[in-house]
Structures are given as C-alpha cells and as structure tokens.
Amino acid sequence: MSEARVPWSQVFGNDRPVEVEIGPGRGELLLAYAAAAPSSNFFAIERAARAAAAIMEKVAARRLANLRVVAGDARCIIARLVPDASVAAYHVYFPDPWPKTRHRARRLTDPSFAGEVARTLAPGGVLHLASDLRHLVDFERKYAQAGTHYARWRRPGGTGGSGSR
Ligand SMILES: C[S@@+](CC[C@H](N)C(=O)[O-])C[C@H]1O[C@@H](n2cnc3c(N)ncnc32)[C@H](O)[C@@H]1O
Image 1 (spheres, helix red, strand yellow):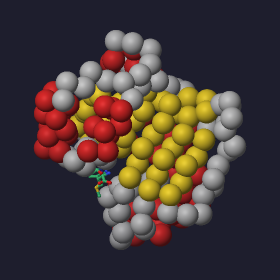
Image 2: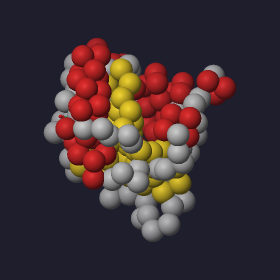
Image 3: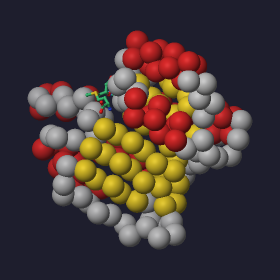
Image 4: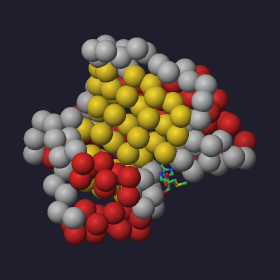
C-alpha cells in the first residue's frame, strides 16, 4: 500500500510544511488559514463532495495557491495516500459525531484513525481537535492525553513541544 503514498512536494510543487484539515465543512477556517500563512501548504479532506467543490470554488476565486481540497473519506485517504511523518498539523473541528454505539465504526475518531495520525505527523507535528461531545473527548483523553473539549497533541521529537496538554 505504501507505494501509492504521494509526496507532498508533488501535490504542491514545493517543500513547505503541510497542514491537513479533516471535515472542513464550508471551509472558512481553512481558507482564512491559507490566506494568512502563504509559507505553509493546506490540504482539506471533506467527505461531502458538494462541500468540497464549494471550497474549491472559493480557493479559485481567492487565488490561493497553497490550498488543495479533495473529496473523500479522510480515514481512507490518509491511510492510503499520506506519507509517514509528513504532516505538520492536523485540524479536526467538530467531526460528525455518530453518537449511537452501533455507528461507532463510522466515527472518525477511532483507534485506527489515531494510529494514522501518529504515523503521518512529522516530529513535533500537532493534532488540533475540537468537539463538544463526550465520546470524542474520551477519545482525546485516551489517544491525545487531553481532558478538555479542545485537545492539542504534539508528536514527540519536535523542538519545544511538551508532549500534550
Ligand atoms: C459537523 S461538520 C463540521 C464542519 C467544520 N469542521 C466546522 O467546524 O464547522 C463535520 C464535517 O466533517 C465531514 N466529515 C465527517 N466525517 C468525515 C470523514 N471521515 N472524512 C472527511 N470528512 C468527514 C462532514 O462531511 C462535515 O462536513
């Protein structure tokens, strides 16, 4: 499977750090980040094809050269396409909750997703995850070692990272 993984330099045409947002929805946060930080690259993975297309239209209208959007399931795309230790930051804000226990397997925040985040984060890379739901907070506690509704987890190995908060 790893032979299919795509170097970010081929996606963006440069070696700048890459931040990934999963489930950006309307994408306004990501669009603002990309406009504010032209020295970074931003990659959005949005399962809803219409929402992804709408963000792409805004990217074109705002002439943002450092933002790419792909429509699909982030769990699959990250596992198959994202190289090891290559993502400077993940942004996951209010992912779909799938609150029923029988829908647990559909949740983004499951152990295999946590494993993919750990595999793909660069040394010192950060996962930003916000949720107002208890089961996602529990996930954060277990895998991101955080106890609040906002988790920021830094992969060990960077300069200046403290591990968790
Ligand atoms: C509740 S909305 C939040 C949107 C945005 N992050 C915000 O805070 O306003 C959740 C978004 O995540 C997307 N999403 C859920 N699961 C996903 C997955 N596995 N891969 C990619 N996108 C996903 C949904 O399509 C939806 O746009």
